[in-house]
Image 1 (cartoon, rainbow, N blue to C red):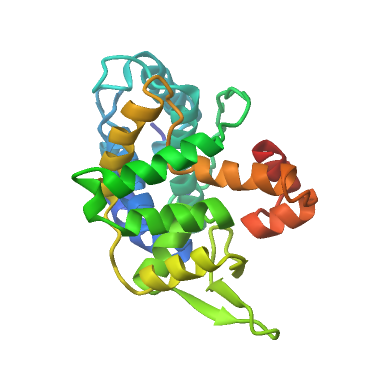
Image 2: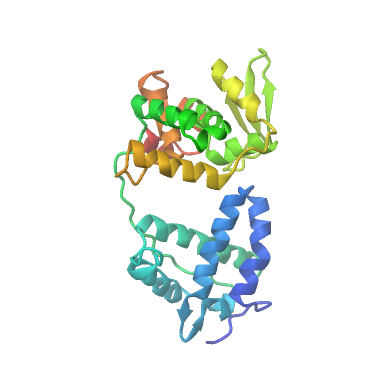
Length: 287
């Protein structure tokens, strides 16, 4: 392939490994998000195109055709563990990863071309919410299960999430000390995050005593364990909603948005502010 008019050349495998940590820090990624991005980049890097892994291609050789070949493979057999293709949502997350690294490569002048992307259409089905009964069942499970009752911080995480709509990564910030509990001018407590997912400050009101108690309990406690939470949720799912593929922590955010709409009768702009959305279109998908 003809070399592009770029200042330097670098293999993709060397490039993504060298810039990933800086991108994560610039965007304030959680440790899980960082590891997930590296894992997806490794899958892309190991994909064989024109007789060699993508990682052995120079960054300026990453073309739209190469990316299209990769997404075709993902759709056919990308889910190696289950021996089937990936969903459109998963494919789009891979494309987001590739797009991120391509933009960085253009900025650093390792390539002068940003390739075209063919994004997949995702289902826009009705958002999943937890019913009041399901919420009660979740709390009961984590209070009484022989294994997971040993981790009371899980209940605190759910208490905060259902009441505030905070993302899991934001609650983690409270747990590890990257977020603070402050008071506003009226003396009411808030959870303050200096840099949220969208890069903006977040001030989340604490409206209920049980939320305040939970927030103070986990603040700076470093209790969170990703595997414990997700293994516990998997076990709870088998008891509460065994056939539901959308039974996950993020549904607490949809649930909070739904209750702000239907019970508290808040308007869309207020809900968007509480959830930390920049676009009302995003909030519309939640309610």
